[in-house]
Length: 465
Ligand SMILES: O=c1ccn([C@@H]2O[C@H](COP(=O)(O)OP(=O)(O)O[C@H]3O[C@H](CO)[C@@H](O)[C@H](O)[C@H]3O)[C@@H](O)[C@H]2O)c(=O)[nH]1
Figure 1: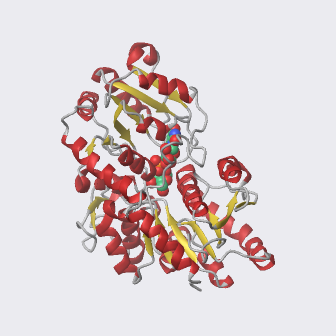
Figure 2 (figure 1 turned 90 degrees about the vertical axis):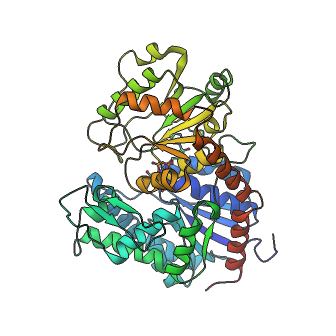
């Protein structure tokens, strides 16, 4: 690390959901290893996630713990309400904190939802860097949406296609798969305008760091550099725990009904690439119809599996929350392991016995699946997950399409067939995902992502004000 970067002080501010905070803390870890000093803004609830980093880098990381604002809003308005409340509460506190700090941060790195930090940075004369926990394809779609405001041919028809001809591969999405913040409002509505101005503030920020890697989404990085009109776009992923650390610097181990060593012991008794891991991320819960199809298919297919089941948090979930059918665990016996709560996902995916991953295509899961070299079976539910599934199936050829939200729920016999195919040693997706996995690991072992991280630190050190 060059001496100019050593000690460079950065404020890192993650959004509070697991899918956002985990990769940004992993990124903070990379910065700490490179000799930077980091202050992380967290709420008391998320302090435990930061604890491992505080213990392993006691002299170079501090926490700035601020109370979570109280937010009362229906689920579809919750994010806008939470981000507004954070701005109101934290903006004056942060101004004061920066101004009275003996050695204040020279940059703010914040989640792409926290766009107001661009205004804070401008007032302080400090550059704001957007951290995108989603990929460059998904970011490109959002940028086109909110900047160009395209309309579908028939907004009352949820299957009406919305096309993005200016994007590489000219993708088309059914209207239903477009961001619900965009779809359910219109120009002039306060929430709609809020989401739009957020995207435009992200675009106006000094630079963007992606948890992705050049080889995965090269055309979209090129597209974004052209659209943003600068080259301060860095791909530094996949941000993952190191090889010898199965829970990672942000304590991904979490807590679940089964201790990690029992899960590993179950996997140790299975042959290579024979197990399907099924998990829908940190927020989604299945509807009863989805759960019925899934559990019937798992039983019918005869494949060995680990199924991670979560309780609803009311997040992205539908209204009709499911529970596992009575007697399911007894019927599947040794064929399946059910983990209730938080599964040690990264460790499971990396295990040699796991050959496939039925996933909702949250971006972290996508990267973890790719890095582990497992065939993915896609069932996106909301948000960027539709874009991510399209990338995996249509553009990269590393995944098999199974379902789409509650609109396309596969027949259980069809899903059973797909699950069987996903662990077939000769499936073409297995060859392809191994190639992409090698590229991912190469990127973070001296390859493109390491070079982008070096460049990022160098450009920050050059005092970009
Ligand atoms: O039992 C579990 C469940 C999740 N995880 C981890 O939690 C993260 C989940 O992230 P992700 O796969 O991206 O899913 P979500 O939690 O649904 O992520 C939200 O954030 C992502 C990043 O912006 C978006 O791509 C998603 O659409 C959005 O729902 C991953 O690191 C998983 O390894 C576990 O370790 N154990």
